[in-house]
Length: 203
Image (cartoon, rainbow, N blue to C red; front, top):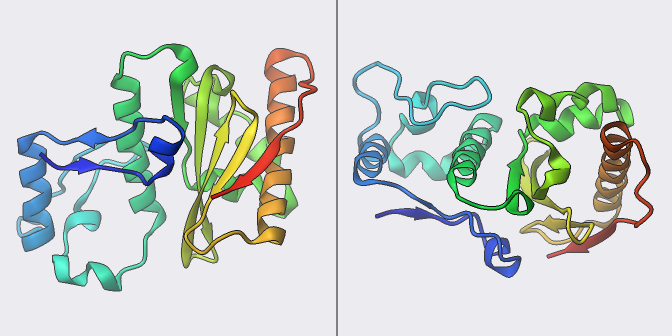
């Protein structure tokens, strides 16, 4: 059985979000990667963020994978799988995780900072982010490089996971933007300020 591991931060932070595929789904993915989609029909593996088709993601030969850029659609499909698996687990509210769309930070950071752009995003999905343990935020840098920001709501840490290492100016800008969003969101939903400051960590 194939298992997806979203990188070392899962074990380092005691966040178990491995996804085990059953034999039917594993066979479907294997055939799509090796043979491409010959039927001309859409193949639906996950529904999330209004997506219903996986043909564009899986309808290519395995040897061509290395020549392709990761797209928002690919990232969001994978995050939808992670969210679905997380939702299915029998865990307390303090252990819930929220996997953000790749468009979340893009819209939040428009014109520097735009809270109204994302103000209702969590409500549309019926998620109270302050009842979650972690927020996972994928960010694309110039449409060429992806990195992950994880908000640990229990420790009030904002953690950066970037294979290219820390980039001080960029990371500080993102950190400041997310702090402002989280504090504004908390004030709106809880009616009070949180006085404990956020801290930033790089991995």
